Image 1 (tube, rainbow, N blue to C red):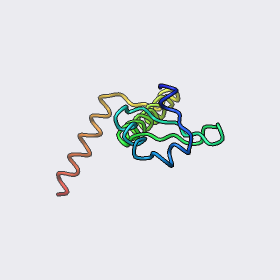
Image 2: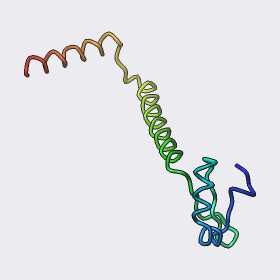
Image 3: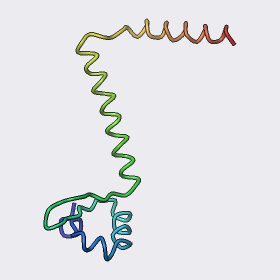
Image 4: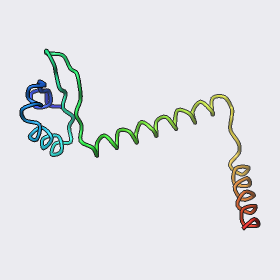
Length: 95
């Protein structure tokens, strides 16, 4: 983050929104919008936002898996593959 470039007052957003959007898309850095000197919003390019959301979702999945491991809620790899094979065979015979 470059403080002088990446923190803007809301008046800047109002008067130069197209320039701000161009900056965000070129630099891929979010911009903090302030109101009365306080941070109020963050503007981010769509691609970076999507990557952030995907990363957060992956972290949630990993945390869920970690909790399951800590509880001992696991099965052996061989047993998992056996279940998958059985499920696939049942689907094949029903088609």
